Image 1: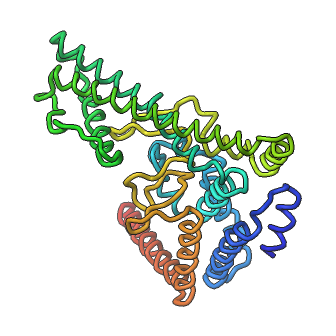
Image 2: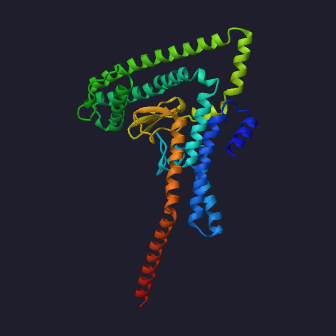
Length: 354
């Protein structure tokens, strides 16, 4: 059934070259849904209760999949600016949708030729245009406050953000060093430290500008070689028309969001070009949505492999739960506790009336 669905769906939507990966994702999701249904059937005797439970289980899968409501737009108590909140990580639909979206964008026959170059171009462009600019603004503002002698204008949060970003950059960028990270405290920070920081930011701007130009030139040269003749150009445009999905790209690069950078937990968070952003230093479940890869025991694995692994892990847990009648046992325990609580409340009311 999953294979037939993908075969017909991809034909109608004119999605090329995605038959096997899409089938694998949807088949894995269908297996999870099957085992979930078996757990419900084994735990409830009434068909009416099961019918009521079906929409209760399905609606959250739709709402918290990441496509209808963005994870950073949820209620502040569960929203996340830099990753996927817990409520998204427990939804199979989130893992399935992300795997399909990222794989189709990254591995289609057209985009795969440019992905690595675009990754360098997009990330270095964000760094020089937004990240360095924001850090420079905070550094200049703090230096002015120090020079004026007005301690009330000193933003300790800005100082912490500058320190955290410089510390992270020394780990991510090979060859980059920053001395005096321990000086970023309200008691030790002075104008010379701010001037030194501005100098380092100029170095970083030049580095990312050169990296952007290099990747951009490399991409342009590749396009020129692929469109060197009228026949080659026609073939190139036909390939682009068949495989490149602009609407999907808008989602994965967060094109319609005016905020390209936000502050969160004393860090600057990238909100643009998420499909190109590697999950630097993040855990498996801490990776941002639409990440091109996931960290797995210190190594980077593709999002497709990682997400299918999670879906089958969820299915295995439900299989174990089904084998031991775990859901039924849990419901019985919960009902027993609720019944005892209701009896106690009733007895208390009777004592009050007496």
